[in-house]
Image (cartoon, rainbow, N blue to C red; front, top):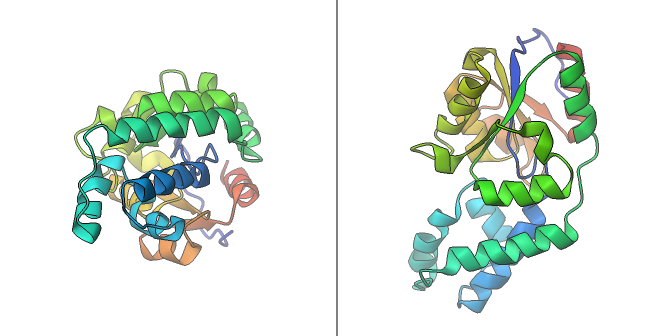
Length: 225
């Protein structure tokens, strides 16, 4: 956790979903790699993490054509989501301290919302699996709800507007390069949460603060409230 010199105003907290609230990244990436391998794209989990973490499935097809000359079938994203949902229902585990963080925000009367590149049906499955879905009723924003996905700031601007809080008074928490860029571009104070993406890369892409895991994130927010 970075040393805090000036406490930012915490009018609301806007969370990314995958990799921040729910531990979906490795499961989803494993499903993606297996499926792309079946279609003749010899990617590895390291490659797909580097290329696509924090992005959308829509960006993958053109990249596979560019890299391997493979045209993925039209229904490949539906198949990928179906396999991913099955893995989430069966194998996903919750992150430690997420409930504690949300409890702390509620006690402090700080509203919170989700801004994710993922679709609503995926978030319904993953958040439902770990018992978080009800805590975000009416405050779950997807890239499908806005003109542009991250790294554009649209989804975080929408999340702030849903809460009725000025984006400059919001804290964004994201674990990907595209998400950190979106948070910074929106005007929010942005925390880069270290997971699959190293902290130095999150910092290089504009994160104002770095949290090395959920315990560190809890401690940082507690100082600010």
